[in-house]
Amino acid sequence: MTRDIEIRGIRIFAKASACAHACAYCLIGPKKLTELPFPRFNALAERFIEWRNEKPNPPPHVLIGFEDSYEFDVEILAGLFHLYKKLGWDDEGMSVKLGGLRMRTEAEMHDWLLTRRDVAGLKVAHASLAGYGTIHDQWNRRERDFDFLYNAMRDAVGLGLKVNQRIFISRSTIASIDKLVLELDKITPNAHRYLSTFVYSGFATRLEAERITEEDRDRLPSSVAALPRRSGDNWLSEREWISTRSDLVSDRSTRSVTLSLEVNERNIDRLESMQCEEIIAKLAEQTRQAYATLPSRSELFEKYADPSNRCIYASMDEIERKWFDAYRRDYNFDVAKGLTHLAA
Ligand code: SF4
Image (tube, rainbow, N blue to C red; front, side):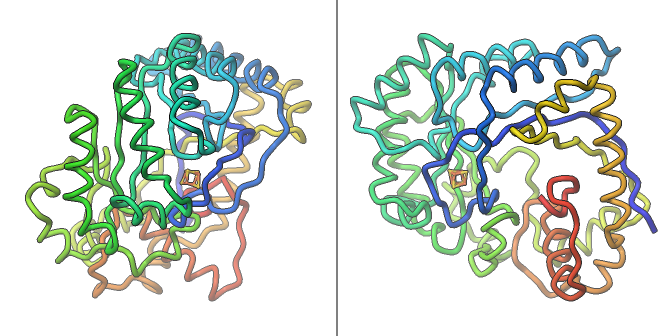
């Protein structure tokens, strides 16, 4: 049975900014950068925003990213925020991730944040933390990274910025989360703080032994259990997902897909010569073809589901990716990357 999809929009992104980290849980995995200059990316993104804004309600989703880190000039950040405002984003969207920045002294980081606040209109600084102190440093594979993030968050609060904190929960971080939260409260108790499991993607596909189990989830200390979970996450084990959400294992559902348009120095000339509708139609066709080659969800379920697995996954997509990886190994199966939710 084929997989039905409906197109809900497009994500336009360029991997043009190096990430200074090599986190063991990175959901991106190996990184390859483009030399694409921002003005050309910006012009293409603006064209798509205008196209989107002319559509009747509800307009298609348009997402824009200049990745893999915010390690770029303040003028680029100002340009990105300008695009986000045209998309109707509010202050919460005027945000940078501190993860992926190169190490700076406290004074250098202060200038970095201050300039981005005053020139680009930065409102929010986001940090991801995998445990307290050296536990975090080991996961992020950088000495003193925890201290760097901690000081940067404290400085951000002093500059009047909002701070968002993602806290990764795993077998090796769970015991330090209580202490971590106490320390983060000293910066500000008002941060938007949420728990997240490692996402089954990229390098994190190697970390199955780090997944918390049903037992861990059900016995969290009350201070940790009280923290919200990442928006949209549902912490169920594979056993629970397949016994309670059989609708998600069904082949009958239609998947809503955001197309992925990765812009780089090899395709920018061609994209600049095409209309938005043309780009969407071509990408939609490639995406449909990629989905048509995938094994059905019921086939993956029958071959690879493990009803005894009590490890926690935040979404059914992650479990399906795990099944699909087993299928790929068994059948030596390959599919174009970036077109489907199973092969990012
Ligand atoms: S900072 Fe983000 S993009 Fe960079 S390695 Fe870590 S998880 Fe991956």
